[in-house]
Amino acid sequence: MIRRMSHATIFVNNQNEALEFYRDKLGFRVHTDAMVGEDFRWLTMCTEDDPDFELILMEPKPGMLMDDATSQQLRAIMNKGVLGAGVFNTDDCRGTYEELKAKGVQFVSEPAERPYGVEAVFKDNSGNWFSLTQPTEGN
Amino acid sequence: MVRRIEDLETLERLDRARDFIDHCYDHPLSLDQISEKACFSRYHFLRLFRQAFNKTPHQYLIERRIEKAKELLGGDELRVTDVCYEVGFQSLGSFSTLFHRYVGHAPITYREKVKQREQAKRQVPGCFLVMYKLESA
Image 1 (cartoon, rainbow over the protein chains, first blue to last red):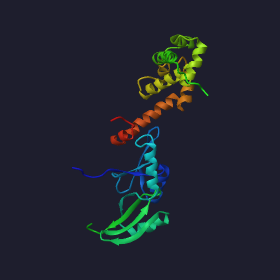
Image 2 (cartoon, helix red, strand yellow; image 1 turned 60 degrees about the horizontal axis):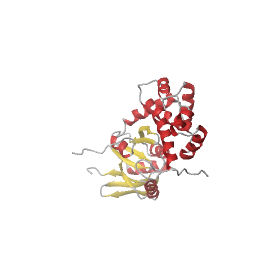
Image 3 (cartoon, helix red, strand yellow; image 1 turned 120 degrees about the horizontal axis):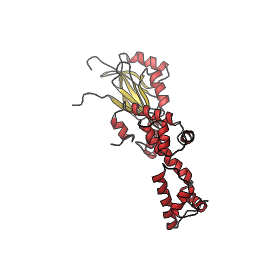
């Protein structure tokens, strides 16, 4: 039986810039940051509340998992901003929206009532978009 | 422009000399000894070897030794000094200098880096190491 998800990969343009964005703007913290190979940096981040779920921030690079063409294609798709990467939960969507917006986070849609709660959509600095949802109680 | 060697017999003789380096890199090898394996005079051999492999026999020998040293430094059975003599260098000084030139770090720093990486690897789910070709399946 599959119980829960512990890691998920988000492809980013640049690991240093992504680290700063997720830490300084979104309020995440670094879970693990280690050079594992000559050119392979294992960088994962988590929210304060859920250190057991790690977001792996990975650069598409040729030479390991991908060939040159694949990594370029992935970067191109990423930069188009069409990759939706997930849903983050919050207790206060409007408050968090204001807070993140003040820090310069780009929002695709403002907080709005949905059948399941209040939801806004923002992008990280690599073009990945995320839902920021305040679930209605019971959802 | 460098002309490629196309004469098969010459190439075979050069290969023989290169194989000799591959097998005996841990011994002190002179150009005379190496060129003898190919049955060429030393200067003729030097020129042909460089033409065929883009490096001198000496450079090839050093690279082979450094490669082996990296392998041994990755483990922890031998001290740096032992590694130096094990791969055929005669002095620790020239080993360190050459190692630094080829690898970018001193031997001891290289060993520490490998160790750090090995420790770091333990934090990464194995499937990622395999998918990203840092380990074989």
